[in-house]
Every structure is written in C-alpha cells, then in structure tokens.
Length: 322
Image (cartoon, rainbow, N blue to C red; front, side):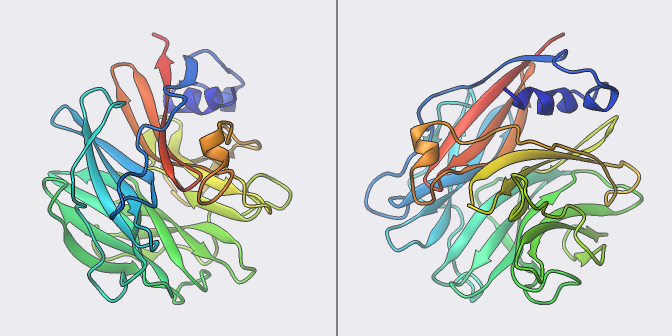
C-alpha cells in the first residue's frame, strides 16, 4: 500500500526525494478491521466517536477523541491504553462546550502536542454558525485551561470564512513556534495556511496565501486539512494532511516543508497514501472518510489514529526495519 511512502519519510532518512523507496519500513496494516472506539450508550458519545488525538504520557497512550451526542453536539472524551490498541474510556468528557464560540455545536477535532511540561490542545470551537480555531492548555490531559480563539473566522489574510485544525510544530524554528491550520479561501475551498507565535498562545498568520493549496483534479481538490502535529526530520518538516476531492471523499496525503522555511514546500504526494476501504470507513455519519489526527512512535513502529466516516476511531501500524 502507498502508506509505505509516508513511512519512508517518517524515518528521516533518504527517501522519495532521492528515489529510494520501500527500504525502511514494512508490514503496514490496519491493526484491527474493527473500530477501536465506537459510539455507546444514549448520552454524550452516542452519536459518534471519531477524529482522535493521541500522545504517550508517562508510558501510557492517552487519546482525546471527538464525541457527539444525539443532537450533534461535540465534546472531547478521554481514553487510556497500555498497548495503543485497547483503550478504556472515562465515563465523562474532559472538555465540553461552555463559551459562546462553542455553544450548541461544541468542541471538535483535537490535536495534541507537548512542549516543555505543558500540553497544548488545538480544537475547533463551533456554535452552529461559525467554526474557529481555539486553544487550551493542561498539565495532566484532563483539566484544561481555555485560551480562547487563536485564529478568528472571517479575519484572515486569505481565509475568508472558517478556521480549523491547528497542527503545531513541537519545536522552535528561527526563534518562533509555527502552526499549520485550515482556512477557507475566496473560491470556497479549504486550504492549509501557516501561523507563528512567540509564546504558543498568541498567533498571527505568516503568509498572504495558503502554503498548501488545493489541487484541481486530484484527491485534495476540495479540502487540504492538517492532520497530526508535524515532525521535524533531517529532510524537513513532515506534515500528514487530510485531503478531500470534489465528491468529498477523504484520503490522506503528505507534504514536506523546508526546515529553514516552514512555508516552503519541498515535496508533496501526488496520490493519497491512505483511503477508505472498510465498511465502517465508507459508511457512517459522513461516508467515505479516513481522517488522520493522531500519530505516535512506539517500540520501533508508528501508530496512526484516524476517524472513520465521522463515526469511529481506527488505528494502523507500520514496523521499522533496522
């Protein structure tokens, strides 16, 4: 499967840029043919459980996932695992809509990164009118301190509607922190932009145009949305992103940016590396969706966590070749 192309890049070793393929990783596969998190009960996570962020904290896997109730309001659930596959969930969400910018719609689509001793959570605040990129911080992944909307809707350089999906690079580059985010262009496509910050709390757009635009006729012709927090390899800054075509089929792509200039694209996948295949990835609240938001490295392999059809959580794995 073409996911191998991604894994070569993840190794931080000579890869597609040098024409060497399929040499560093092997045995990519979905760990389970069934979802690892599914809707349950008749309460806050009965409608859908999907789009997870995952980190390793004190030796355990911690997942924050978007959960919807029967009315479509989203909250963030918390789950733990010792192996990254079998998770136990808390009975109550750890982040629920409270503010005006979250009212009724909720808190959606988390990304997690740890910098120093603090976890930074970017998420979408949605009030059934506007979606805006928001931030909260925590020391324990359970108790969260909101920092508000960090990139407001309708006020961007090029993004003229909503903002979403903040993927923060977990180290400074050129003395600043950087974040890839989704905005909506004037032509009504969702594209990836770049923002910067000195303190991880206050953010400003870095460019006048998207840094990863949609591409007509390709798998990412309609949506180009950042996935998990990028990683910095010796070849550059690696961003996994979620692309949707004109039929809103969601597949996974990869882009490599310059380590010296996070706005400069070095390489970008022409074809998707991961696509809906299983029934629960093709059928759900939104059909034909795989949406990667979590990625961790553990015991010589990478685990990729994704939402399936806006209803379930799945996981895939690939082993390192030493």
